[in-house]
Length: 441
Image 1 (cartoon, helix red, strand yellow):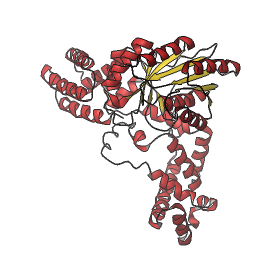
Image 2: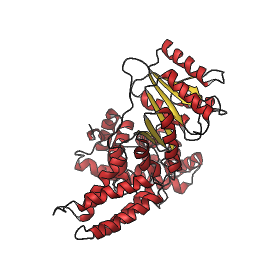
Image 3: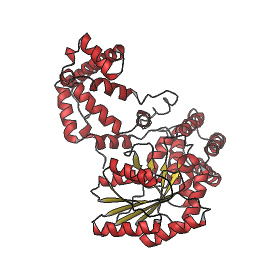
C-alpha cells in the first residue's frame, strides 16, 4: 500500500539526514522534492501547497536538540503534518444504542461498494450485531446475486425482492428488519455518476426515507483526484458522514488518501486493502502516516495476530514448543491463521523499515498454498511424527500434493531446522515473547 510514495519520501529525506543543522536552504530543497513527489502522486494542488507551507514554517521555527538529528526533526514535523492532513484522530462508526443502526452505502460505479458492504457486515458481526444486508442495487446485472453470495460466505442475511424499484426495496427491508429484530441494516445501493440527475435524486430520496445512522461514500483509491472531485460533489448532495478507501493494495499512488479529508471535510473511516472479506481496517491517520514514512505499522500487525490467534490456543502452542512437541499438525494450523491475516506482502509492509526494502522483491503469496498442500497430503500419523517420513511416503505425498519430491524434501528439512530452533528457544525461555503478552489498550 502506497509503497512507491513511501520510497520516494524516504529518498527525499535522506538529503537532510546527513546535514549538521537545519537551514532555510536544505529545508527548501527537501520540501521542493516533497512537493514534486506529492503532485506526482496526484495529491490535490492546494493540499500540497498548504502542507509544504506548514512544514516549512514549523521546521524553520524549531531548534535542533542535541539528542536528535536534523533529519529526525523534519521527519517528525512531516509525520505530524501528515497525521493532520489525514484527519488527526480516528473517526469511529456511529452505532444507534436504542434502535436500528442503518448504514447507507453510496459511491461511483465500480468502486467496490458491494464487497465493502459484506466486509463491513463481517466486521460488525464480531461485535454481536444482528445484521441485515440489503440488495438495493436493482440496476447492475447480477448485483443482487453477488451480495447474496458474499452474505452466505460471512453467514449474514440478505434482503432482496423481485422488484426494480430501489426505494420500495429499501422501505420493505426496514420493515423486515423491525419485524425480525435486526439491529443493524447495511444498504448496498447502485453505483451512480454524479452527472446522472435521476440516480442522484434516487439516493437522496433513499436517505430521506431511511434517515441513516451513517452514510458512507466508497471510493476507489486508484482513481486519484477523480475520486476526490466525485466525493466533493456527492457530499454536496448527500452530506455523507465518512469515506471508505478501497483497493489500497493496488497501484494507489496516494493522491486520494492524502487529499480527500482536506478537500471534502469528512473523515476516512475504513480502508480496504485486499479481496478477502476479512481485509477491512478501521482507519487510523497516525498509522497510515507512519507507513507512508516507511516506519511500518506494528500496532495493526499485532491486532491482526490477536484477531487470528486465540489466547488459549497461543498458550497451548507455547507449551508444545517448550516441550519440543511442535509438529506438522501445529504448523498447518499456523499457516491457516496466517492466511486469514492477509497476503504476505501486506503483512511485510507493516514491519518498520522492511516494506521499502522488499518493494522490488517478488513475495510469493502462493508459497503457503503449496506448503499447505504438501502437509494436507500427509496422514495424521505422519504429521504428528515427521520422523517416519521415509522415501516411499515422501513420493506418495509429492504425487498427492502435485509437487515434486525435491519440494517435499525441502519442506521437511526446513521444518526440522525450525524444530531445532524452537528447541533452543525452549531452553532459553520465552520471556515476554508469547502472543498472549501483546496487549494494546
